[in-house]
Image (cartoon, rainbow, N blue to C red; front, side, top):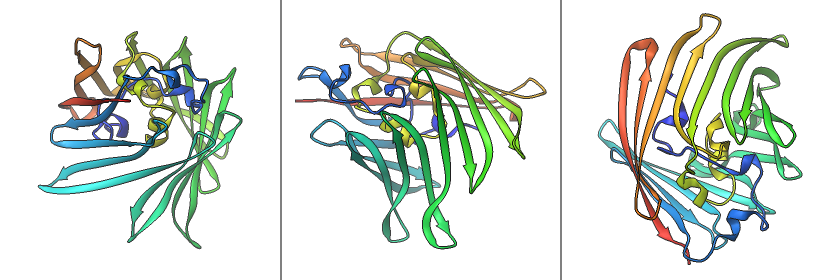
Length: 273
């Protein structure tokens, strides 16, 4: 039950990603002065994630080097943009490059996430998420597995931070609360504000804390209706004299199985000229 987003695919990433809207040229962080830093690599217990950039400072590629059972595995995800927004994520699978996810927008807001896989007619869209907003902020994510709405997440904001995500199971259009995920932040911004646009939210799955302006300190999952804590996580950060996040210590606890895992992530940056 350890969340995908808290493990090492993108270790330690925990802050603002433009509130699901892709950043435009008028966005404040796009106007960062020359000399601003961008994250180039994260290293977590031997696993490495590299970020490759386009000339306009958007992320073109995310490369992961992970060690499983003593063997090195390399995965690469390519991002394609349309009108400044992430349009597609592509991966190399089965001997060719394929679309893994694509994104539809209503104006500046992401309205749908399409997931690809093998189906009856070959490689194509198999599942999708439908995103709902209130006053420009994400409020619900409806997950469709095939044509069937099977889950929905409902999020609660406190100012500019998502502090709660409720997961409902849907059966014949009846919603039943199954889990509540809660988040605690501090006010210090995370290093991912050096990354232009919403690429990290696109890359992750149900990573709602990516949409918050604060840096994530704690996360907890409670199972419903028993009110049993099944997972919790905490993160401690180290910053350099320039205020850049250079290290994090994450402790994940699988409460249901009474296991705990800690890992350290270091962050490397390059000066953007």
